[in-house]
Image (cartoon, rainbow over all chains, first blue to last red; front, side, top):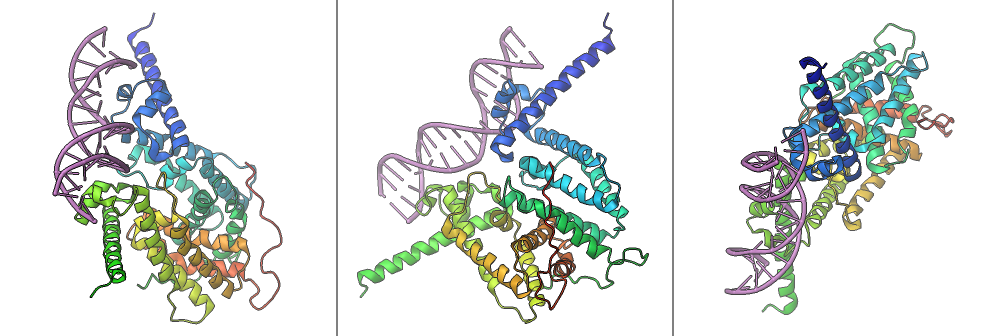
Length: 214
Length: 214
DNA sequence: GTCTATAGCTGGATAGAC
DNA sequence: GTCTATCCAGCTATAGAC
């Protein structure tokens, strides 16, 4: 009863699930051993196959990193796109920052792969990177809801939040020494970027920040 | 004419200079190949010796990382301790942030070794770490000159500045997209942390920031 | 697609002559 | 202290039987 197309789909589905199972095992492995500790032998053992079989699904080790990146970026985009219970733009922005930090501290290896560039020869492919671009656009729109549209302020926002996350992950893993500062930091940021709440004037000072003199 | 003590000193000096020459080569190597790209063979070749000779000066590869860390931490402490041309506490703090950023962006590998923990089995020894502790104390004192003494605000400061540096190094290496935001970010920070300039009242809001709700 | 076997290389570290 | 020679473990990746 199965025609050729059905059979192809079925096999394709099997193949995809095996593919995904390997990436599952890869994430499980790097969660235990660190992102740089990924080896094909260990990965295969954890996936219940042998090392050469991995090459039936991935061309190289970097292809595995790329698939891991792609999944992480998709998870990130989906998580950040989930609706919030509140309506106030300021509350949304604050909750968004907390959600970002929670996502990052939940899996330092994932944070390292997504947001720090520490694997020697690896760069994500455009396809894997695409969800991350979408997420940045989403962050931009949430800032815009708060009247923040200047590129300079968007960059300040990303630096502010990633700085808190980075300190948290690097210097107090598992704790909340820096993540608990998110609410106050967001308040500081908004006070600075929207000093005249109900005005249409450009909210920030007109003077340009000087560069580093050297 | 050389007594035993002189001879010992001389030899000790030779030994130290060879030691330093190896660390020179190590920094030269990781500047080209990345911090994780340090191998004893390449290191020895660049230092003009052979790999086993390295073991006459260092017990292990991690001992090399430790010596590299120690030198970097000392350079950092010395650089940050240099006097500023200005007297105003606020100017000093701002210049200090610019100096920190300049130090970090000047050598991403050094930044990675000093401030991110990315080498798998490596932790700096207490002796190598000591200068970094001194530098943190110095930063604290410069914040105190600006009336900022609460631990929470010190943590916000470190997150703010390292966030800018981290974004700069990760996403615009060699540029100044984030470092040029330092002046404005410091102004934002000071406005938040010293809202009542000449008052002795505690400057920040009494409400405690809530933790991440999971 | 999955396996066994292995190539080919690079890594850190050691032995022992000089 | 410095070398040559080498060990041994680990790695990615491939060949070829089934």
